[in-house]
Image (cartoon, rainbow, N blue to C red; front, side, top):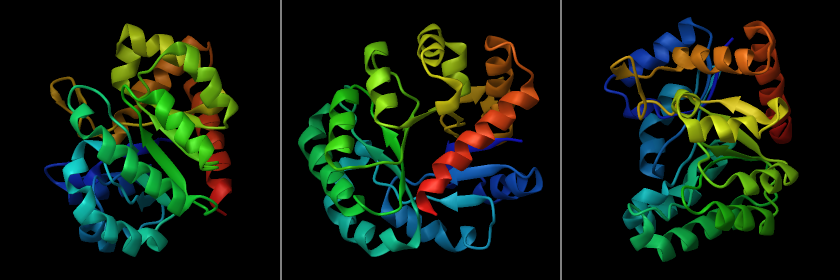
Length: 243
């Protein structure tokens, strides 16, 4: 069993094929969007699918579009229980829109506070600020996607009750493996972040998450089937928050 908690299906060269392949392989996917207009374009294709859900996003690196798109975010917020990709990015690529990002993310959190929503969080170079905003707005269900922050903040994220989604790129890097080693198995979900990762000179697909499951099995001296069961249980625990 494979669960992909963060994948941008709409950004693949052939999104329809990716959807069909996931359905055939019985893969569970939370499909992210980068803007509400993207969510609107894809929504009809996901409605009839049982194990694939479309999330409503407002990516921090697309902050220049946030003002024009925020009305669409509010318009579509009741159509899904999944919010993502949202968050902050204070890296070199995003720092120039820091104020816009904070304003948008704060407004999103106020809107979803108290609602049964699961958030997939972008936090590059802004991990402390993201955590503070999440807790200040009483957000109970969130997943830190591709966490790359300090090891010393992981415990605080865990104490807040949040999960981490890890991908093959993290598994293959020294810093990623250090982060993974600090996260208890009961708080780990798997993600492809496709199509933004390449493996074996091709774009990653959700089915490739067997790489992460195999790594976790070896790291924790467990069988792959045991890891798959743990990830499934973790995902079910997360989903309980919106039922």
